[in-house]
Picture 1 (cartoon, rainbow, N blue to C red):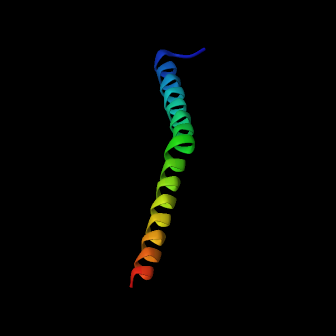
Picture 2 (picture 1 turned 30 degrees about the vertical axis):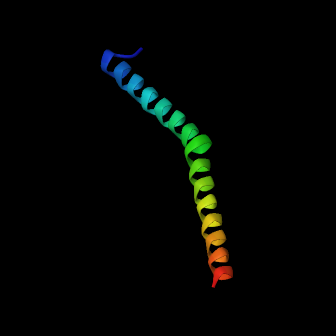
Picture 3 (picture 1 turned 90 degrees about the horizontal axis):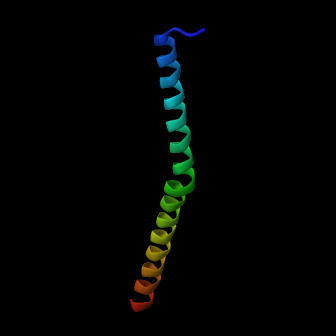
Length: 57
C-alpha cells in the first residue's frame, strides 16, 4: 500500500496538521481574549486618567 518514505511523509503531514490545529485552539481560547481584555483595560485606565486630570485642572 505505502512505501516507507510515503508513510513518513504522511506522518509528517498529520503531525503538522495536528500541531496547527492545537495552536489555533490555543490562540483562540487564551491568547486573543487575553490580548483584547488587556487592551480594553488599558483603554479604560487611560480614559479614567484623562477624566481625573480634567477634573484636577
